[in-house]
Length: 164
Image 1 (cartoon, rainbow, N blue to C red):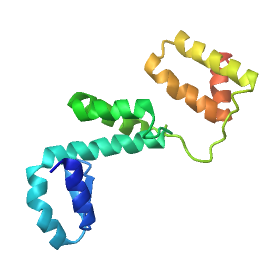
Image 2 (cartoon, rainbow, N blue to C red; image 1 turned 60 degrees about the vertical axis):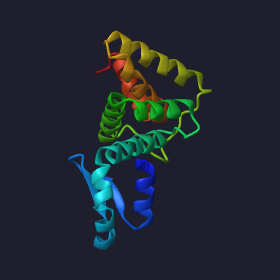
Image 3 (tube, one colour; image 1 turned 45 degrees about the horizontal axis):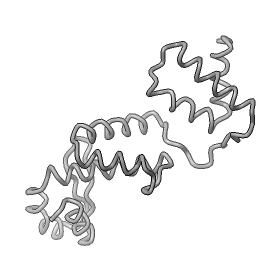
């Protein structure tokens, strides 16, 4: 039985499986049902943990606006299934982003891309990030925040214009 099908059957039996903060499996539900699944879960512990971690990465991707049909979504998840180091990287990255509250928040103000001044300002922010040697892999975080949040754009434009 695959880890995904074990998780699905355990959930159907009224038990919720979660990752504990220490990285082990936490079972939530009725003791009798948990006891029935304990041996299977122990025998497949590492595979189930990996599957729960992949689910965490999937949820993070969905919260960042990706859909399961999105090419990048499928590529990341496939990589996580086939490469333990990739899974470790994306799991850590997703947790870091959540801890920094960089996941898009519903009801944030969306900046219209047709506004030429906003597009120009975002390009100025991009150039400023390069000028301060901010690592390229983090540029998209700042730029996305500026696209969604006019106050963030104003904040970074102060840096661009040396107003701090």
